[in-house]
Length: 403
Image (cartoon, rainbow, N blue to C red; front, side):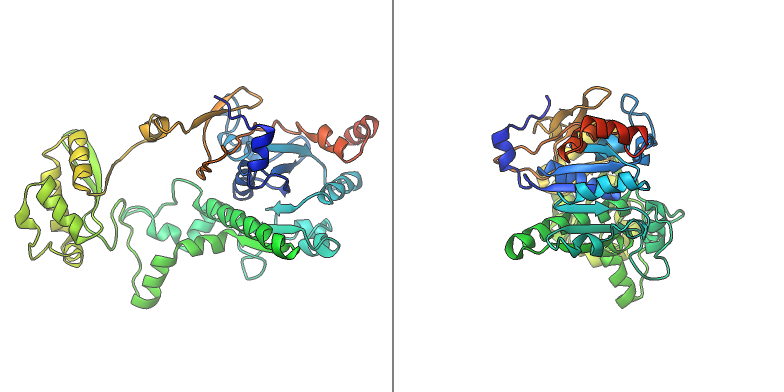
């Protein structure tokens, strides 16, 4: 079913009444603003005339629409403006006069060259919140470098700890983009809260590099204070054992024993081998890590006695952390989603598509999941709000200032 938010429920949404204007593309800024839309903000997405956000053209997987775009842009309004034209820039300025929040992840310096940098925008409107998203920050030797997700993962060292011993890899999702987007989201909410108390907005810089570095705190501290580069271990863990995928009769299962109580539960309640609980090579996690090959061998000898479903149930009953190694089809059919009614339908120009509810669940109001906008779908409506007549809008369109 399609999520429906009534006018009464709309007022209960955390960010109802907040207007966000976003100059965005790809992933990092769009994921931040999509969550702002989920939380009730009005998000107006500025797109290039004729082309739009280039993520619209990554693929055609969702009824002819791009999967990234459908994921990241529901609930927004699309307005196409040529910001390089004087007429288009004037439209943008009038729109920004009504904004509470501005988010942008254009190339470094692009907004400043248009006269739309944070300092200029906040000079007469100190209550405005401006979030600038960059790849590497606003200074430093990499400031002007292109910063796609994979490049930032490599530059920060994330790739050096991800993958197998033989091969470094990037993560399977755009982790650097998502990290930056989540910190931008947090910054907007914090700035709005502060504005409620002080009346003053904020200018905030969020870089993909800094956000990813923050997520690398554990391996970074190991390197700084123990001179240890975390090894790439696939599904395993450098500091915990047993922690890996282990064979079963019909597949494999992941087991992650976090402490010595878990080890005792595994070997006594699941494997029926109480003699292993205090074994001199396995009694503590430190010992198990020191003897990792033998630990893994012992665990594997016992897991391969069971089929996956039976072993999963035994591990759960014993309180031993475990999981099946699922694929995307398994996720789509996962009972943890279906039995909790997490699926909804979202409208798009190509028809309704399935989507999962936002991860922040409010008990008193369901967060909206608005339609995915077609390119320029809301241009006329938004320009009309700014006081432009139909004739004026037609003239702007003829001149290429809007689309």
